[in-house]
Length: 77
Image (tube, rainbow, N blue to C red; front, side, top):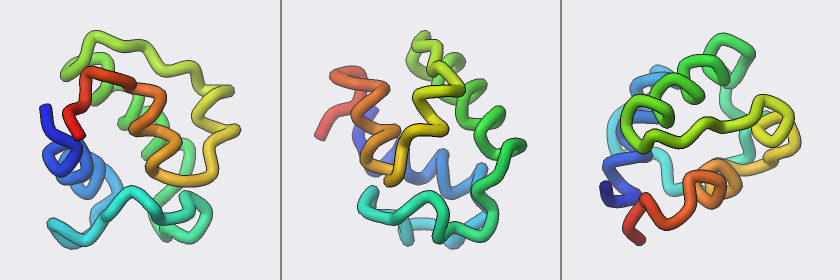
């Protein structure tokens, strides 16, 4: 999956307009970034990439790019 496709899935979770996320956004600046969106993110990554994200690692993340990096090489640049 390409990074843009991953960002589009994340846009659905965060309920933001399509093609608005770049990866550089600060998580705390996103209105809909909360515990529910974190759980949805974990489920989406598990379903699409067969990767289990640790909630503590997500909580330590500051940007969307940090989350992309956690998924690793399963996301094409």
